[in-house]
Image (cartoon, rainbow, N blue to C red; front, side, top):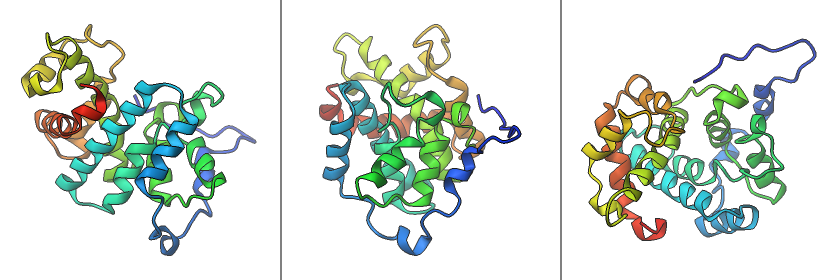
Length: 218
């Protein structure tokens, strides 16, 4: 659930993080090539399942861009691939999604403002940076859906994405006791914020993940 942010006296607003950031003229530079992005993730993340989640989200974001076609495709993909790049114990929940941009820039990478914002907004409940653009909402909605799709695959006899169907995921979506940590209300925002019916949103994500099933070990 998105909690509106109310700034307290003397408090630094999370959105201050974005003020004075890179101009669009500089944003046109390549953030980094994919291999460098993967190297960054492997350097900072110890959990293989987090990296697989990021690969899944990258694939889904690319597919959603192809459906929505707003902004820059590279931005969508990189936001998906890097949004949990700071998912480590040393980073508090309220900075998760924000700190990753600082980490990237500390290593000499340019992070477009749109990517910075989307990565912070995917964790809106904690960062209080609310999604605004289509890319923001795509990442916000897709983030939890990838986990639900993986969980659906893992209860199949063969534990393979290839055998998962949209109907199977929809059935699990409607069962709140299955993968109880899934933020179903976040996923459902796809209908209001992206104008994509829930079953189509699931189909787009599932198809994208099936295409990289080998990388996901599924």
